[in-house]
Image (tube, rainbow, N blue to C red; front, side, top):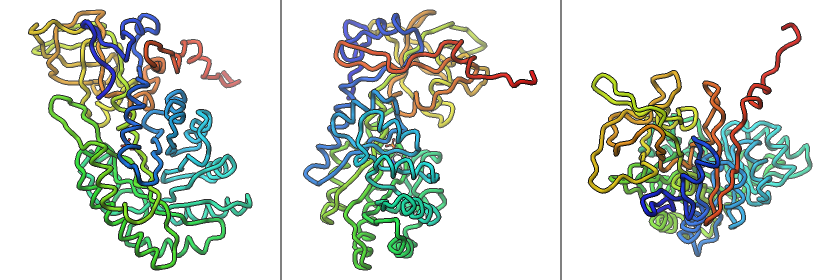
Length: 421
Ligand SMILES: *Cc1c(COP(=O)(O)O)cnc(C)c1O
Protein backbone atom coordinates (compact mmCIF):
# COMPACT_ATOMS: atom_id res chain seq x y z
CA UNK A 1 0.00 0.00 0.00
CA UNK A 2 1.15 3.54 -0.66
CA UNK A 3 -0.16 7.08 -0.46
CA UNK A 4 -0.30 7.85 -4.19
CA UNK A 5 -4.03 7.80 -4.89
CA UNK A 6 -6.47 9.50 -7.24
CA UNK A 7 -8.76 12.10 -5.75
CA UNK A 8 -11.45 13.49 -8.03
CA UNK A 9 -9.56 11.91 -10.89
CA UNK A 10 -6.21 13.56 -10.12
CA UNK A 11 -3.20 11.64 -8.78
CA UNK A 12 -2.08 12.88 -5.38
CA UNK A 13 0.94 12.26 -3.21
CA UNK A 14 -0.73 12.21 0.22
CA UNK A 15 -2.75 15.48 0.19
CA UNK A 16 -0.80 17.20 -2.59
CA UNK A 17 -2.00 17.13 -6.20
CA UNK A 18 0.79 16.03 -8.53
CA UNK A 19 0.01 18.77 -11.13
CA UNK A 20 0.66 21.37 -8.40
CA UNK A 21 4.16 19.99 -7.85
CA UNK A 22 4.74 19.81 -11.61
CA UNK A 23 3.76 23.47 -11.96
CA UNK A 24 6.21 24.49 -9.24
CA UNK A 25 9.16 22.21 -10.06
CA UNK A 26 8.86 21.39 -13.76
CA UNK A 27 9.18 17.83 -15.10
CA UNK A 28 10.57 15.24 -14.79
CA UNK A 29 10.85 14.86 -11.00
CA UNK A 30 10.70 12.22 -8.29
CA UNK A 31 8.25 12.62 -5.43
CA UNK A 32 8.35 10.64 -2.19
CA UNK A 33 5.67 10.15 0.44
CA UNK A 34 6.61 10.53 4.10
CA UNK A 35 3.54 8.52 5.19
CA UNK A 36 4.54 5.60 2.96
CA UNK A 37 8.16 5.59 4.14
CA UNK A 38 6.95 5.69 7.74
CA UNK A 39 4.39 2.94 7.22
CA UNK A 40 6.90 0.59 5.60
CA UNK A 41 9.49 1.15 8.31
CA UNK A 42 6.90 0.37 10.98
CA UNK A 43 5.80 -2.81 9.16
CA UNK A 44 9.29 -4.17 9.74
CA UNK A 45 9.66 -3.07 13.36
CA UNK A 46 6.24 -4.60 14.13
CA UNK A 47 7.11 -7.79 12.26
CA UNK A 48 10.29 -8.27 14.31
CA UNK A 49 8.89 -7.39 17.73
CA UNK A 50 9.34 -8.56 20.41
CA UNK A 51 12.81 -9.74 19.29
CA UNK A 52 15.52 -7.18 20.08
CA UNK A 53 16.18 -5.69 16.65
CA UNK A 54 17.30 -2.76 14.52
CA UNK A 55 15.89 -2.05 11.07
CA UNK A 56 18.76 -0.55 9.07
CA UNK A 57 17.54 1.19 5.93
CA UNK A 58 19.73 0.34 2.92
CA UNK A 59 20.70 3.85 1.88
CA UNK A 60 21.78 2.78 -1.58
CA UNK A 61 18.13 2.36 -2.61
CA UNK A 62 17.26 6.02 -1.89
CA UNK A 63 19.89 8.23 -0.35
CA UNK A 64 18.47 11.75 -0.15
CA UNK A 65 19.35 13.16 3.28
CA UNK A 66 15.77 14.37 3.86
CA UNK A 67 14.51 10.81 3.38
CA UNK A 68 17.21 9.48 5.70
CA UNK A 69 16.27 12.06 8.32
CA UNK A 70 12.60 11.05 8.02
CA UNK A 71 13.51 7.44 8.78
CA UNK A 72 16.30 8.25 11.24
CA UNK A 73 13.88 10.33 13.33
CA UNK A 74 11.70 7.23 13.69
CA UNK A 75 14.66 5.34 15.17
CA UNK A 76 15.84 3.56 12.03
CA UNK A 77 19.41 2.45 11.63
CA UNK A 78 21.23 2.80 8.31
CA UNK A 79 23.10 0.33 6.13
CA UNK A 80 25.83 2.13 4.18
CA UNK A 81 28.09 0.78 1.44
CA UNK A 82 30.50 3.69 0.97
CA UNK A 83 32.13 6.58 2.81
CA UNK A 84 29.77 8.91 0.96
CA UNK A 85 26.72 7.06 2.23
CA UNK A 86 28.19 7.07 5.73
CA UNK A 87 28.44 10.87 5.53
CA UNK A 88 24.83 11.05 4.31
CA UNK A 89 23.66 9.05 7.33
CA UNK A 90 25.60 11.35 9.66
CA UNK A 91 24.26 14.44 7.85
CA UNK A 92 20.77 13.10 8.54
CA UNK A 93 21.60 13.06 12.24
CA UNK A 94 21.80 9.27 12.59
CA UNK A 95 24.25 8.37 15.37
CA UNK A 96 27.18 6.12 14.52
CA UNK A 97 25.90 3.34 16.78
CA UNK A 98 22.95 2.91 14.41
CA UNK A 99 25.06 2.71 11.22
CA UNK A 100 26.32 -0.59 9.78
CA UNK A 101 28.95 -0.60 7.04
CA UNK A 102 28.49 -3.17 4.27
CA UNK A 103 30.20 -3.54 0.92
CA UNK A 104 32.72 -5.75 -0.81
CA UNK A 105 35.50 -3.18 -1.29
CA UNK A 106 35.75 -0.87 1.70
CA UNK A 107 38.92 1.23 1.48
CA UNK A 108 41.19 2.09 4.40
CA UNK A 109 40.04 5.72 4.12
CA UNK A 110 36.42 4.61 4.48
CA UNK A 111 37.30 2.45 7.48
CA UNK A 112 39.10 5.38 9.12
CA UNK A 113 36.13 7.68 8.45
CA UNK A 114 33.67 5.31 10.10
CA UNK A 115 35.91 4.36 13.02
CA UNK A 116 36.52 8.02 13.78
CA UNK A 117 32.90 9.09 13.36
CA UNK A 118 31.37 6.10 15.16
CA UNK A 119 30.04 2.84 13.78
CA UNK A 120 27.80 0.04 15.00
CA UNK A 121 29.63 -2.65 13.07
CA UNK A 122 31.47 -3.47 9.87
CA UNK A 123 30.11 -6.35 7.83
CA UNK A 124 33.42 -7.75 6.63
CA UNK A 125 33.41 -9.53 3.28
CA UNK A 126 36.87 -11.05 2.89
CA UNK A 127 40.03 -12.02 4.75
CA UNK A 128 42.18 -9.22 3.24
CA UNK A 129 39.51 -6.71 4.27
CA UNK A 130 39.49 -8.16 7.78
CA UNK A 131 43.26 -7.74 8.08
CA UNK A 132 43.16 -4.20 6.71
CA UNK A 133 40.40 -3.23 9.15
CA UNK A 134 42.36 -4.62 12.07
CA UNK A 135 45.40 -2.57 11.03
CA UNK A 136 43.42 0.63 10.63
CA UNK A 137 41.62 0.16 13.96
CA UNK A 138 44.89 -0.62 15.76
CA UNK A 139 46.54 2.47 14.28
CA UNK A 140 43.66 4.55 15.67
CA UNK A 141 43.83 2.80 19.06
CA UNK A 142 40.30 1.40 18.81
CA UNK A 143 38.66 -1.96 18.14
CA UNK A 144 36.27 -2.43 15.25
CA UNK A 145 33.11 -4.45 15.96
CA UNK A 146 32.58 -6.88 13.09
CA UNK A 147 30.35 -9.49 11.62
CA UNK A 148 31.58 -11.61 8.73
CA UNK A 149 29.33 -11.75 5.70
CA UNK A 150 28.88 -15.37 4.79
CA UNK A 151 27.79 -16.55 1.39
CA UNK A 152 25.31 -19.38 2.03
CA UNK A 153 25.24 -20.59 -1.60
CA UNK A 154 21.49 -20.09 -1.94
CA UNK A 155 19.67 -19.36 -5.17
CA UNK A 156 17.67 -16.19 -4.49
CA UNK A 157 15.62 -16.77 -7.66
CA UNK A 158 15.87 -13.14 -8.69
CA UNK A 159 17.43 -11.16 -11.55
CA UNK A 160 21.03 -12.28 -12.14
CA UNK A 161 22.42 -8.75 -11.66
CA UNK A 162 21.01 -8.51 -8.13
CA UNK A 163 21.49 -12.09 -6.87
CA UNK A 164 24.34 -12.11 -4.35
CA UNK A 165 24.11 -15.35 -2.38
CA UNK A 166 25.41 -17.98 -4.84
CA UNK A 167 28.95 -19.21 -4.42
CA UNK A 168 29.98 -17.76 -7.80
CA UNK A 169 28.96 -14.22 -6.70
CA UNK A 170 31.61 -11.79 -5.44
CA UNK A 171 29.98 -11.32 -2.03
CA UNK A 172 30.98 -12.64 1.38
CA UNK A 173 33.05 -15.67 2.28
CA UNK A 174 31.85 -19.20 1.52
CA UNK A 175 29.96 -20.46 4.54
CA UNK A 176 32.04 -23.64 4.53
CA UNK A 177 35.16 -21.53 5.26
CA UNK A 178 33.52 -19.49 8.02
CA UNK A 179 35.05 -21.48 10.86
CA UNK A 180 38.57 -20.79 9.61
CA UNK A 181 37.89 -17.11 8.96
CA UNK A 182 36.36 -16.54 12.41
CA UNK A 183 39.35 -18.28 13.98
CA UNK A 184 41.66 -15.82 12.26
CA UNK A 185 39.42 -12.85 13.13
CA UNK A 186 39.67 -13.79 16.80
CA UNK A 187 43.46 -13.43 16.63
CA UNK A 188 43.46 -9.98 15.01
CA UNK A 189 44.06 -7.26 17.62
CA UNK A 190 41.92 -4.52 16.07
CA UNK A 191 38.74 -6.56 15.76
CA UNK A 192 35.92 -7.62 18.04
CA UNK A 193 33.77 -10.37 16.55
CA UNK A 194 30.13 -9.86 17.48
CA UNK A 195 28.04 -11.68 14.90
CA UNK A 196 27.23 -13.00 11.46
CA UNK A 197 25.95 -11.21 8.35
CA UNK A 198 24.15 -12.53 5.29
CA UNK A 199 22.45 -10.86 2.30
CA UNK A 200 21.40 -13.06 -0.58
CA UNK A 201 20.01 -10.64 -3.13
CA UNK A 202 17.39 -8.08 -4.00
CA UNK A 203 13.77 -8.16 -5.19
CA UNK A 204 13.13 -11.65 -3.77
CA UNK A 205 9.56 -12.66 -4.43
CA UNK A 206 9.57 -15.90 -2.40
CA UNK A 207 10.44 -16.63 1.21
CA UNK A 208 12.05 -20.04 0.61
CA UNK A 209 15.56 -18.70 -0.22
CA UNK A 210 15.53 -16.59 2.97
CA UNK A 211 14.51 -19.64 4.96
CA UNK A 212 17.31 -21.73 3.50
CA UNK A 213 19.89 -19.02 4.18
CA UNK A 214 18.72 -18.22 7.72
CA UNK A 215 18.69 -21.90 8.72
CA UNK A 216 22.32 -22.08 7.61
CA UNK A 217 23.07 -18.96 9.67
CA UNK A 218 21.41 -20.57 12.71
CA UNK A 219 23.57 -23.67 12.33
CA UNK A 220 26.66 -21.55 11.91
CA UNK A 221 25.80 -19.55 15.05
CA UNK A 222 25.72 -22.76 17.12
CA UNK A 223 28.92 -24.02 15.54
CA UNK A 224 30.85 -20.78 16.06
CA UNK A 225 29.68 -20.57 19.66
CA UNK A 226 30.90 -24.10 20.25
CA UNK A 227 34.25 -22.99 18.87
CA UNK A 228 34.41 -20.25 21.48
CA UNK A 229 33.18 -17.19 19.58
CA UNK A 230 30.70 -14.73 21.00
CA UNK A 231 27.83 -14.33 18.57
CA UNK A 232 25.30 -11.82 19.84
CA UNK A 233 24.09 -10.17 16.65
CA UNK A 234 22.72 -11.50 13.36
CA UNK A 235 22.47 -9.18 10.37
CA UNK A 236 20.06 -10.86 7.97
CA UNK A 237 20.40 -8.39 5.08
CA UNK A 238 17.66 -6.93 2.92
CA UNK A 239 16.09 -8.08 -0.30
CA UNK A 240 12.37 -8.48 0.25
CA UNK A 241 10.68 -7.75 -3.09
CA UNK A 242 7.83 -5.41 -3.93
CA UNK A 243 4.98 -5.71 -6.48
CA UNK A 244 6.03 -3.75 -9.58
CA UNK A 245 3.13 -4.94 -11.74
CA UNK A 246 0.28 -4.47 -9.32
CA UNK A 247 -2.24 -6.39 -11.35
CA UNK A 248 -0.48 -9.75 -11.02
CA UNK A 249 2.30 -9.75 -8.39
CA UNK A 250 1.98 -10.49 -4.69
CA UNK A 251 5.40 -10.83 -3.03
CA UNK A 252 5.59 -11.96 0.62
CA UNK A 253 4.53 -9.54 3.34
CA UNK A 254 6.89 -8.20 6.02
CA UNK A 255 4.75 -9.96 8.68
CA UNK A 256 5.42 -13.34 7.06
CA UNK A 257 9.08 -12.45 6.69
CA UNK A 258 9.19 -11.51 10.38
CA UNK A 259 7.55 -14.81 11.34
CA UNK A 260 10.15 -16.64 9.26
CA UNK A 261 12.97 -14.84 11.08
CA UNK A 262 11.50 -15.77 14.47
CA UNK A 263 11.10 -19.38 13.36
CA UNK A 264 14.64 -19.76 12.00
CA UNK A 265 16.87 -17.67 14.26
CA UNK A 266 14.52 -16.37 16.96
CA UNK A 267 15.64 -18.80 19.67
CA UNK A 268 19.35 -17.97 19.53
CA UNK A 269 19.15 -15.00 21.89
CA UNK A 270 20.70 -12.72 19.28
CA UNK A 271 19.87 -9.15 18.43
CA UNK A 272 18.50 -9.13 14.89
CA UNK A 273 19.34 -6.58 12.24
CA UNK A 274 17.75 -6.39 8.81
CA UNK A 275 18.72 -4.11 5.94
CA UNK A 276 15.63 -3.50 3.80
CA UNK A 277 15.98 -0.92 1.04
CA UNK A 278 13.47 -1.44 -1.72
CA UNK A 279 10.57 -2.49 0.49
CA UNK A 280 10.79 0.76 2.43
CA UNK A 281 11.56 3.14 -0.43
CA UNK A 282 10.26 1.49 -3.63
CA UNK A 283 6.56 2.18 -3.37
CA UNK A 284 7.23 5.39 -1.47
CA UNK A 285 8.23 7.18 -4.68
CA UNK A 286 7.00 7.91 -8.18
CA UNK A 287 8.68 9.54 -11.17
CA UNK A 288 6.50 12.17 -12.86
CA UNK A 289 7.08 13.00 -16.51
CA UNK A 290 5.40 14.94 -19.30
CA UNK A 291 4.49 13.69 -22.76
CA UNK A 292 6.57 15.59 -25.34
CA UNK A 293 5.16 13.93 -28.46
CA UNK A 294 2.85 11.15 -29.49
CA UNK A 295 4.52 9.73 -32.60
CA UNK A 296 2.73 7.34 -34.90
CA UNK A 297 5.30 4.96 -36.35
CA UNK A 298 5.23 2.00 -38.70
CA UNK A 299 2.92 -0.47 -36.98
CA UNK A 300 3.53 1.03 -33.55
CA UNK A 301 2.96 4.24 -31.69
CA UNK A 302 5.52 5.93 -29.49
CA UNK A 303 4.92 7.93 -26.38
CA UNK A 304 7.96 10.21 -26.14
CA UNK A 305 8.43 11.47 -22.58
CA UNK A 306 10.66 14.11 -21.04
CA UNK A 307 12.02 11.47 -18.63
CA UNK A 308 14.66 9.11 -19.95
CA UNK A 309 16.95 6.24 -19.04
CA UNK A 310 19.30 8.66 -17.30
CA UNK A 311 16.50 9.51 -14.84
CA UNK A 312 15.23 5.95 -14.29
CA UNK A 313 17.60 3.28 -15.57
CA UNK A 314 15.90 0.14 -14.21
CA UNK A 315 13.94 -0.72 -17.38
CA UNK A 316 16.97 -0.49 -19.64
CA UNK A 317 19.43 -2.00 -17.12
CA UNK A 318 17.38 -4.87 -15.68
CA UNK A 319 14.49 -5.10 -18.14
CA UNK A 320 12.41 -3.97 -15.16
CA UNK A 321 8.70 -3.26 -15.30
CA UNK A 322 7.16 -0.09 -13.87
CA UNK A 323 3.44 0.57 -14.01
CA UNK A 324 2.86 3.81 -15.91
CA UNK A 325 -0.31 5.75 -15.15
CA UNK A 326 -1.80 9.04 -16.32
CA UNK A 327 -1.78 11.75 -13.65
CA UNK A 328 -5.28 12.78 -14.67
CA UNK A 329 -7.31 9.61 -14.56
CA UNK A 330 -9.01 8.52 -17.78
CA UNK A 331 -12.81 8.25 -17.53
CA UNK A 332 -14.05 4.72 -16.82
CA UNK A 333 -14.40 2.56 -19.97
CA UNK A 334 -12.57 5.04 -22.17
CA UNK A 335 -10.49 3.46 -24.97
CA UNK A 336 -6.85 2.45 -24.49
CA UNK A 337 -4.00 2.32 -26.97
CA UNK A 338 -0.75 0.36 -27.19
CA UNK A 339 2.40 2.45 -26.91
CA UNK A 340 6.12 1.98 -26.82
CA UNK A 341 7.02 4.38 -24.01
CA UNK A 342 10.42 5.98 -24.62
CA UNK A 343 12.64 8.87 -23.56
CA UNK A 344 14.54 11.36 -25.72
CA UNK A 345 18.02 9.86 -25.17
CA UNK A 346 19.86 8.79 -28.32
CA UNK A 347 19.88 5.05 -27.59
CA UNK A 348 17.35 2.38 -28.38
CA UNK A 349 17.94 1.21 -24.81
CA UNK A 350 16.09 4.31 -23.74
CA UNK A 351 12.79 2.44 -23.72
CA UNK A 352 10.62 2.23 -20.61
CA UNK A 353 8.00 -0.18 -21.94
CA UNK A 354 7.04 -1.88 -25.18
CA UNK A 355 3.47 -2.39 -26.36
CA UNK A 356 2.06 -0.97 -23.12
CA UNK A 357 -1.68 -0.52 -23.01
CA UNK A 358 -2.38 3.03 -21.84
CA UNK A 359 -5.36 5.34 -21.83
CA UNK A 360 -5.37 7.93 -24.62
CA UNK A 361 -2.81 10.58 -23.76
CA UNK A 362 -1.84 13.75 -25.55
CA UNK A 363 1.11 16.12 -25.77
CA UNK A 364 1.62 17.95 -22.50
CA UNK A 365 -0.13 15.33 -20.35
CA UNK A 366 1.56 14.13 -17.19
CA UNK A 367 2.27 10.47 -16.51
CA UNK A 368 3.72 8.75 -13.45
CA UNK A 369 5.99 5.74 -13.08
CA UNK A 370 4.92 3.88 -9.98
CA UNK A 371 7.25 2.08 -7.56
CA UNK A 372 10.16 4.29 -8.58
CA UNK A 373 11.41 5.29 -5.13
CA UNK A 374 14.10 2.60 -4.91
CA UNK A 375 17.09 2.49 -7.27
CA UNK A 376 15.57 5.43 -9.18
CA UNK A 377 17.03 8.83 -8.32
CA UNK A 378 20.15 7.23 -6.83
CA UNK A 379 21.06 5.72 -10.19
CA UNK A 380 20.26 8.86 -12.19
CA UNK A 381 22.96 10.52 -14.29
CA UNK A 382 23.33 13.50 -16.58
CA UNK A 383 23.79 11.43 -19.74
CA UNK A 384 22.98 13.54 -22.82
CA UNK A 385 23.60 16.58 -20.55
CA UNK A 386 20.13 16.20 -19.13
CA UNK A 387 20.13 17.92 -15.71
CA UNK A 388 20.04 15.58 -12.72
CA UNK A 389 16.38 14.87 -11.95
CA UNK A 390 15.08 16.76 -8.89
CA UNK A 391 13.50 15.14 -5.83
CA UNK A 392 10.48 16.30 -3.85
CA UNK A 393 9.25 15.11 -0.45
CA UNK A 394 5.58 15.30 0.52
CA UNK A 395 4.34 15.37 4.11
CA UNK A 396 0.55 15.67 4.44
CA UNK A 397 -0.42 18.77 2.50
CA UNK A 398 3.15 20.15 2.34
CA UNK A 399 5.83 19.49 -0.19
CA UNK A 400 9.46 20.54 -0.42
CA UNK A 401 12.14 20.21 -3.06
CA UNK A 402 14.82 18.08 -1.38
CA UNK A 403 17.22 18.14 -4.34
CA UNK A 404 17.08 20.96 -6.87
CA UNK A 405 17.41 20.47 -10.57
CA UNK A 406 20.83 21.91 -11.45
CA UNK A 407 20.96 24.80 -13.91
CA UNK A 408 22.89 24.43 -17.16
CA UNK A 409 25.41 26.96 -15.81
CA UNK A 410 26.05 24.73 -12.80
CA UNK A 411 26.48 21.72 -15.04
CA UNK A 412 28.85 23.45 -17.46
CA UNK A 413 30.85 25.05 -14.65
CA UNK A 414 31.80 21.61 -13.36
CA UNK A 415 33.94 21.11 -16.45
CA UNK A 416 37.24 22.94 -16.42
CA UNK A 417 39.45 23.86 -19.35
CA UNK A 418 43.14 22.95 -18.93
CA UNK A 419 45.69 25.79 -19.33
CA UNK A 420 46.90 24.61 -22.76
CA UNK A 421 43.49 25.22 -24.30
C1 LIG B 1 21.42 -3.77 -1.72
C2 LIG B 1 21.61 -4.26 -0.36
C3 LIG B 1 20.56 -4.23 0.56
C4 LIG B 1 19.17 -3.76 0.22
O1 LIG B 1 18.52 -4.56 -0.71
P1 LIG B 1 16.97 -4.31 -1.02
O2 LIG B 1 16.66 -5.30 -2.06
O3 LIG B 1 16.84 -2.92 -1.51
O4 LIG B 1 16.22 -4.55 0.24
C5 LIG B 1 20.81 -4.66 1.86
N1 LIG B 1 22.03 -5.10 2.23
C6 LIG B 1 23.07 -5.14 1.37
C7 LIG B 1 24.37 -5.64 1.84
C8 LIG B 1 22.90 -4.74 0.05
O5 LIG B 1 23.92 -4.79 -0.80
